[in-house]
Image (tube, rainbow, N blue to C red; front, side):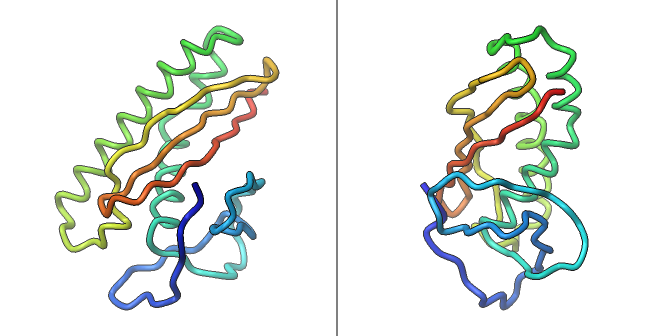
Length: 148
């Protein structure tokens, strides 16, 4: 499921710089994400901002080094590591949201569920995730991670 719509009406919102490159948020097709900083070409808010903040926070949990250090090609171990890191991020977001009750509900995290895990090579893993906002909208996306 892709994002149903976007808006350029940012009234009353704090904006983030989009660091995901030239993605089409309305497309349901897989897209290559290349996170980078530099000359920002656009700002984001709403569910796009939430997904980006979630992914940055997840990458800061030491997820990838733990996956690299785990048993090769062990999906069950990868799921356990992911779920532990995910739980930490979700709890941090919820605690922050409890302190900032005025944030728009489409920028508040309700849940992130791991829906599938696959590995086509010993040097990569793909997590399929479904993120649900406090507003009730859901976004499904794939997090491909190189492990070499």
